[in-house]
Amino acid sequence: MNLDTYDYLDGNAAAGELSNIFTMDVTAARGQCAHCGAMKRFAEAHLYMQGPGLVARCCVCEHVLLRVVNARQRVFLDVRGMRCLILDTSGLRESGR
Ligand SMILES: [Zn+2]
Image (cartoon, rainbow, N blue to C red; front, side, top):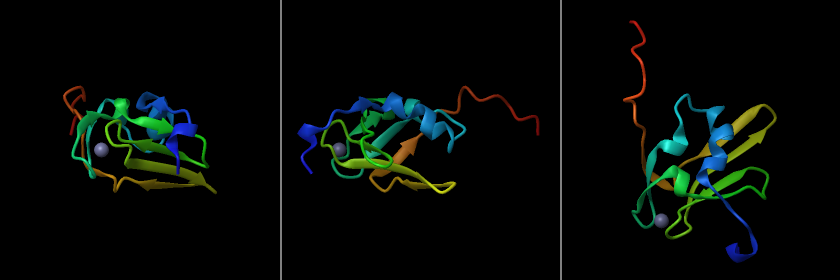
């Protein structure tokens, strides 16, 4: 696949789609690329939305970090391209339990 022929958005464009899955804002999280090891904010990822779902690629090496496809009331989430995803919980309030 020649990525030069496709325009991409930054990872912030995935906020709406990912908010259907995660209660926390994933675009503010930091993730590590499983291919090159770069640790970046998810918002810096290159987001391709031309396919049936969305694909986020590493902004350093273009390796696929995450895929999301909606089909027939199911969401298919593939995050194997990330070694880890670090979410900041400091803004969360106590649940009262
Ligand atoms: Zn990478």
